[in-house]
Amino acid sequence: MSSPKIIIIGGGLGGLTLAQSLRSQGINFELFERDEGPQARIQGWAVALQWIIPHLRHIMPKEAPSLESVSVSAGQSEPDTADLFDANTGESIMAKKGQNWGPGTFIRVNRAKYRQYLLTGLDIRWGHRFTHYEVTETGGVKAFFDDGSMATGDILVGADGLRSRVRSTTVREALYQPNPPALNTLPAGVIVGEVILTREQYKRQAKLGRAFHACMGKGVFLFTGLTSYSSDMSEGNFYWLFYFPEDQPAESWIKTASKAELLAFVKGKVQGIYPAFREIVELQKVEDMGEPFIMHDRVPEMCPAGPVTLIGDATHPMTPLRGEGANNAMRDSIELGQKLGEAVELDSSLADALRAFEAVMIPRATQSVLLSRQVALTMER
Ligand SMILES: Cc1cc2nc3c(=O)[nH]c(=O)nc-3n(C[C@H](O)[C@H](O)[C@H](O)COP(=O)(O)OP(=O)(O)OC[C@H]3O[C@@H](n4cnc5c(N)ncnc54)[C@H](O)[C@@H]3O)c2cc1C
Image 1 (spheres, helix red, strand yellow):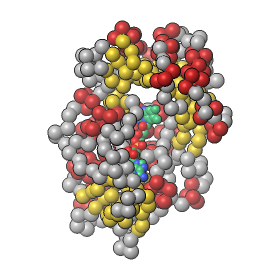
Image 2: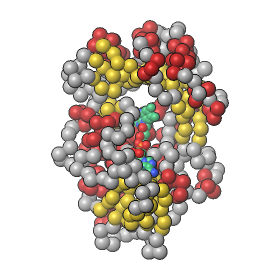
Image 3: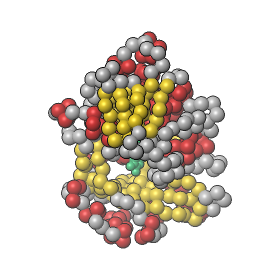
Image 4: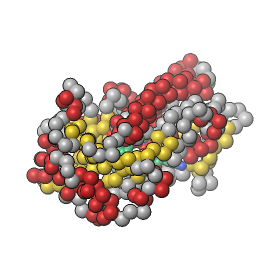
C-alpha cells in the first residue's frame, strides 16, 4: 500500500503521542481536536509519567524541550519526590514496604505545558468536533464534523477520551458480555480543591513530597500535588483530591452540594489526622473549590473487524488512584504506532495491525483498570 492516511480524533495525551509516533516514522496522518486551540480549556493539574518516559524520548522530535523543563518543579534545584503516608501516625507506608518514589522514578509534568511539549512539530486541526464516521466501499473511512466538514482516510483512531464519540459508533453492545457495562460507575467520589501556598507553606508540603504526597487511613484518602510555581518562586499552586466511598454514585449528594458543603465535609473527615496532612484543607478557600466527580472505569475489548480502533480513556478509562491512565494511553499510542509502521513497511493489512495492537493492549490495560478499581473499592469508610 502506498502512503496510507491515519485519521486521529482527539488531541489529548493519547492522540498527540500517536501523532508523534506516526510523524517520527513518516506516516501520513490528520488529527482533529474539538478545542479551538491549545489554551482553549484548562487542561487539569499535573500527571506523573512513569514507565512511559523512555518510549517518549524515542519518538519526540529533536527540537522538543526536555521533559524536565515541563515538570511541575522546573526551575527548582531539587528533583521530584513523592510519598504515601499513614494518615494517623505520619509514617511512610512506602518506606515500610521498602519502596520509594525517589528522584528518577517518575517525572510529574504540568498538564498545560506537557500538551505544548507533545505539540512540538505537529500541525493539528483545532476546532473540529467529530460527530460520526462511515466505512467506505473500499474499506477506508469518512469522518464527519459538526461544522459539516468531512475527512477521508484509511484508518480512524478514537483518542477522544472518557465520553468517546467514536466508541459510541464503534463497539457493538454484545461485545461487552460477560464484561462490565460500557462505562462502569464506581461507588466512589472525589472532592477537589485548589490552594495557593506561600513559600513557607509550600516548603512544609515539599518535606512530605516535592511533587506530591498522599495519606490514607481511618476513612481518609487525601492526595496533595503541586501544579506549578509563580515565576519568582514566592508562591506554589497546589491542588488536593479527597477520595471517599459513595454508595449512591448515580444520585450522589456531591452533584448538588455547594462549595461550602463540600469543604465542610472534607474538613470534618480530616479532623483527626496527622496535622501536616490536613494543613492544605485548612488553608482552602471556599470559592476555590473545584468540581467534584464520581469515578468511572471500563475494561477494554477488541473492536469489531474493520478500519477503526480506540486508544486511551476512549477504550479503558480507569480511576486515577494508581496514576496509570495517561501512562497507558501513551503506551497504546506507541504500540499502535509501531504496529501501523510495520504494516506500512510490509505492505500488509492495516486493519489486521489494529487487531494486533488490541491483542497486546487489552491484557496490559485490563490489569491497570482492575488494579485501579480495586483501590477505589477497598477505601476505608
Ligand atoms: C484527577 C486525575 C488525576 C490523574 N492523574 C494521573 C496521573 O498522575 N498519571 C496518569 O497516568 N494518569 C492520570 N490520570 C488519568 C489521565 O488523565 C487520563 O487517563 C488521560 O488524560 C487519558 O488521555 P486520552 O488522550 O485518552 O484522553 P483525554 O486526555 O481525555 O483527551 C481526549 C481529547 O479528545 C478531545 N475530544 C473529545 N471528544 C471529541 C470530539 N467529539 N471531537 C474532537 N475531539 C474530541 C478532547 O477535547 C480531548 O482533548 C488522572 C486523571 C484524573 C481525573
